[in-house]
Image 1 (cartoon, rainbow, N blue to C red):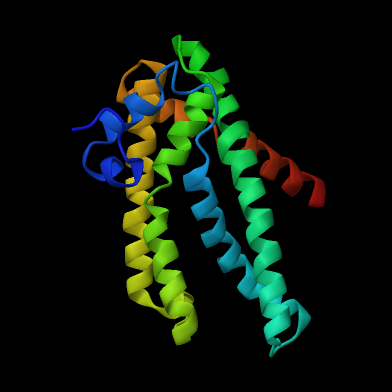
Image 2 (cartoon, rainbow, N blue to C red):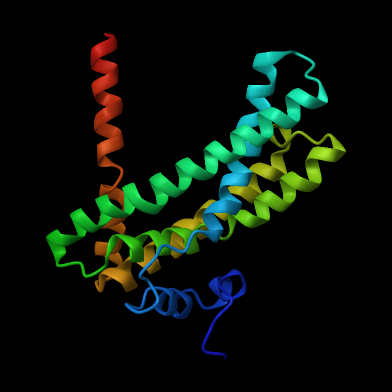
Length: 194
């Protein structure tokens, strides 16, 4: 295999090798964001369906294009910020409890690589949209997206383990605890509303 992997191919069959390559100190001075862009396009297309309906029950082509472009740009920016910087920072902070070794950019790159499987969902959406297929009512889509989510979690745990230099159990705990601030914010909002 070559020294420079194509992560869009190697992440499926050799996730450990791919992650090790992309999280080396000399390779990870910056965040690898290309998978986040694809994931942002998918998320933006999903959100735009609801945004279009805010303008009109039967939106025009201009409204559809404007809503999709705006939602895609906002989704890409938010995904890069949250999955590329905020959550990796929380994972790094929590990982220090177990002497984790990864930097924020290394963990952000792990997150980006882990989200590569969502490209298959994006391809499905791009094919389904012009055909008028509504993915929200397709039972096969739910099974397909569930399998993709399992792959993303699997690659994330492998990646955190490799980047932080500890076992899979600590990697799983490190990843799960990174959701604690979100849970606390939701609990706080519920308490304020009641």
